[in-house]
Length: 83
Figure 1 (cartoon, rainbow, N blue to C red):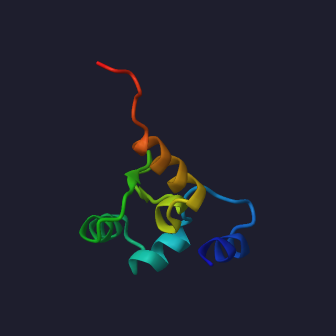
Figure 2: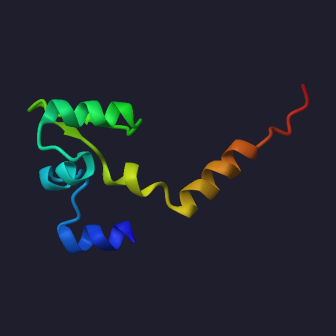
């Protein structure tokens, strides 16, 4: 559902949330307060060159099921070499 909403808001398929979306997420337009909100809530983010926080859409949407299945298969791999 988040992906459908994102496509409706930003049809260009942006990687990061826009300033308006950040304001909606954090509840404030101020960059320092947004950073504080993201840190307190444990939301992965990074700081842009303009000093404003950036959050990736993938962080909020989570990983697709196929990515999780591949990661699980790799984690379960055991070498068959006898030591």
